[in-house]
Length: 208
Image (cartoon, rainbow, N blue to C red; front, side, top):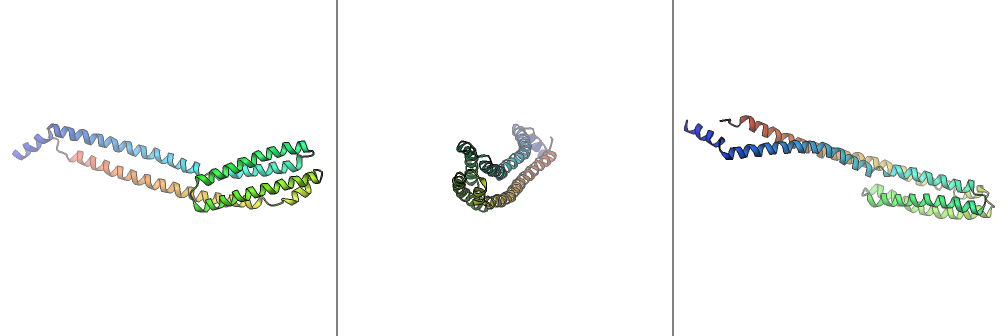
């Protein structure tokens, strides 16, 4: 009887009140952590997706550059029109070169880094070939055939490099997403275990 009175006195003491407040605070903290985990999951997946989809955009930009080069050949019939068309092509060339350098700087996957480095080097080399082709265009009085033949097919290896790099990037994006999901699932499981423990403690804690 004395033992029960002592236990009752403890659970009615200020220390018990503080303990209940602490458990309540912990309970709501874990609820917040679970909710935050699910929000954080979406954010991290989106960040991984955004970081790893840049080659898709680069492929589009490079195809636009190729089209502008074709426009240089097809639409240039004088030095003035050649200069205008070349400036448009140059703008696209610089945009692609900048995008490729940004991808290289932001990426840490070896297979992608190697392919992007090869693309950057080949892209710069192709630019020099196009310059030579322009001189040939002027020499042939703006007849595009010889200039087109001089650079025929040099863009294809670069397109293949971007396609391969994009495949690697999609694989990396899937691995990154799976890693984030696994980490978040583990975090939620720990939270649920803690909530279950607090719930059991609340159930079995003497009320008097």
